Length: 394
View 1 (cartoon, rainbow, N blue to C red):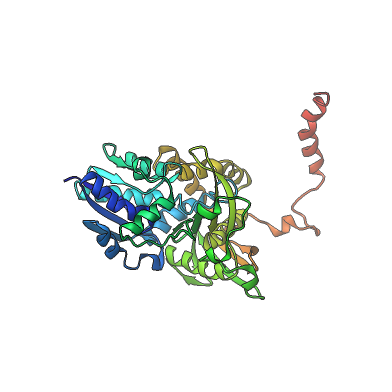
View 2: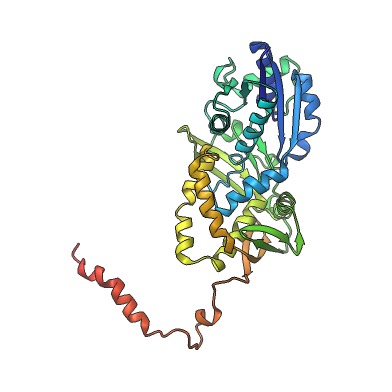
């Protein structure tokens, strides 16, 4: 019998996929679940996979690796897709697929499978990584070949076959959770005019229930990475988990957007990214003190390209790797401390300092100083205006 290694989350799609793959390919199905910070969602997942028909189950704790080797490099690049989406699902897929390939090689399996739909981005992200790391791999994407045409039909199939799943006809939307975020798509969210139900959210407290007094955080950065929170040194995952908790309590980090999928479809997504939102604002604050103007502007001109590489599944591409080298070289100077104020859904930078700051308070002041001769500005302006004067009739 052939062996198929399935990226398994325990959700509706992959739970159905275990039985369907086993029955239709007469194969052993090895389920691989990556612990990326889903928390209680992973409770009993190994037993559930075996009960559904998996011949073997791998559950790997990848939380620290996920944050240190995937989330942090992306945050160093300030990558946000289409101005709002912090790429929480996108950045998880290459790590899952990488580990899936490693297990396939260990199990001498030629086949890998995933539960992504044929309309979405995840199929691209998974499969580009598979092919990059195991060019001769055979990929099975059940959503592209099985007879089920909707999540409703999957729910009916799971009920008929005794497969326990969280999704119901009343709450048919798709959720994806990891240490960086929770995403919600599909079902009742497909109408972009409809407000999401309040009982859907899991990480972020509704604004009207948040504290009536603000809280302040101090985050220390070293070479572009947050290393201490209020003076306490934390590992990458623990740093993100701590910021998720406090920022979530203050209603920070929720977005509701319509985005452009790589396959050409517009999709409505609702995302909760509390800790990541705080890190993004804090990181930019340290950069504002420590990076040269032209270096900062050059890097910023590349943010959309970097974000697109992550969103579209090109994490292991040579262009993303090259851009990461450039980004990380710049980040060697990004060291300092940021003070953040959290209040009623707002994340506000209220202070920043750095031992390598390029900010000179004596030079920037509106009071009297001797470092800058304001008369020099006249010649500077005239030289820059020359082409405008010569081309006044254009």
